[in-house]
Length: 177
Picture 1 (cartoon, helix red, strand yellow):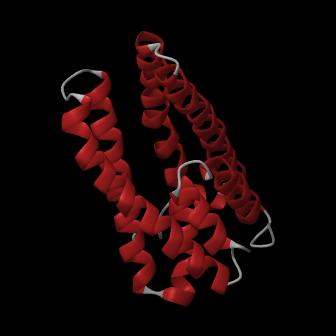
Picture 2: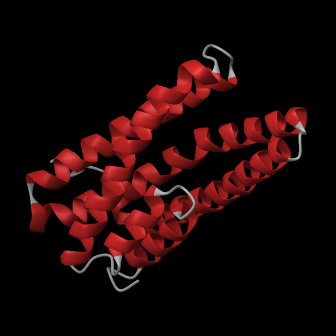
């Protein structure tokens, strides 16, 4: 009953739009991450650090924009998978909060990269588990075609934008996306 009173579940345009914006910002973050690695490979440490900083900023925004869709997906899964959906939602929200807080502490220099990378990696692993497990359950329930495959793709970080757009379409179309 975590999301039973969530008022946005009746506002699919708002939920799908925030998820699509999340996908766009996630894609921008991915471009800056690739740029960071390219800059480091070219010996441009300063440029790499600036590009990495922008990627970190996008990480602060991307996941909170996906939370309404996480809640709606939970709400739609609950009738078929029951308590498993609630446990997965708690995992997703907890991982999202941890990732965002750790990213904020990194960009505000409360934590160094070395201090942050271990905990944020664990939080991303938890979120990856949510992407895969929820994708599988949603595919089996007929709510998110190819949900398992897209969940695995989202868990790689590189596939997050595609996952966000495909889930937005599935939520909008009632499971036919």
